[in-house]
Length: 330
Image (cartoon, rainbow, N blue to C red; front, top):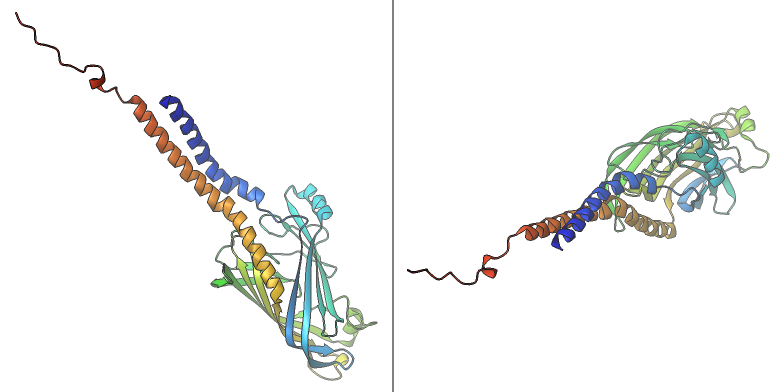
């Protein structure tokens, strides 16, 4: 009976020990993916900002500028691209909509971001664009990879259509979550005018004819939860200027927008709660289950060897020969 039990335990030990690395190195890359149908929105605010009044072409202080960012998964487009790439692809149709304190549009910029569902690396396919212009992204945008490392990454800037390093600056605690802090600085760069401008009848082409150009700089900050690769908080110190040309009436430059853009408090709370729950799922695949199965496999192996040793132990001689033989005399 002990022999049979030890063999069963040995088989279980081998199975669990083999399952441990399979979960981490085989199952995890195939199960940890960004859903193709995911939808998310985010509201950011810049209080006491500077905004251009297009009527007078003068910059003025405003109490608040609101930025609404939406990312909507396009399942149909993902499936179409997967036919040619052979991998799991996510297509996000994004929109960054900026409105002034009166609720009127300041600018809007649509994007189509195509990336690998597990690694978050860009996938180049038809439709990849910013504000209707085709682009070929390099580096990350919106999300870091699962199991983010303590190192610099390449990050795509949609305004300037360029990729620049975003630097790892250290590990911090953000509302009870351990995060990696990253920072990127985009120096003053000439950028295109948005296709949709807030003044009716004015187009990027008509502005270009005046000789006026648009310039932009930002300091971008992200606090990223490393297991999920999801930013739990973000800020931008953002500045835009119009420079030169007849549109400014002889002035060298005028501020189009300047403000410290931060996530709104209710969205911070929602994001932190969501990341905490997703973090548990990643820990199950990368730590809890693999190490748990390995420890259980070792324990079962030890028990199996113990039972096998007990089964091979000889019987107690006292049980078969209780009395000593009597001496034989002549």
